[in-house]
Image (cartoon, rainbow, N blue to C red; front, side, top):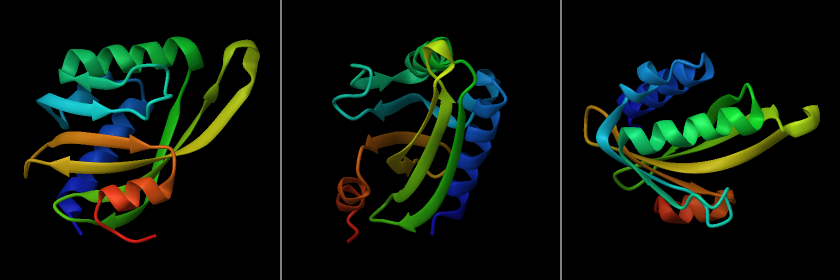
Length: 131
């Protein structure tokens, strides 16, 4: 398991959950690539720190306080898989909670790519793993 990569992800998510986007971005390369599922807020592919910050700020405007909870890590082919639980409030105070599934790649010191999927099966396949 890429324990350094998992530690990077967890530290970045902890900073994100505190609303400290500057600290969260320190765990990603300047040219980070974040690929969303096709139906996720029509954002598609996000590139770089500014793109990621814009996405996070948009999420904060839509959902208010958002909490991410990573878990279920599995080592893949030059990457790792994880489930990320998303919790927040949509307009009107409606609670929203769902799982997303990510494949995370590092450059050996920082996260340089995150690919998100709606299903665990899709993410596991992308990581070269079986369900």
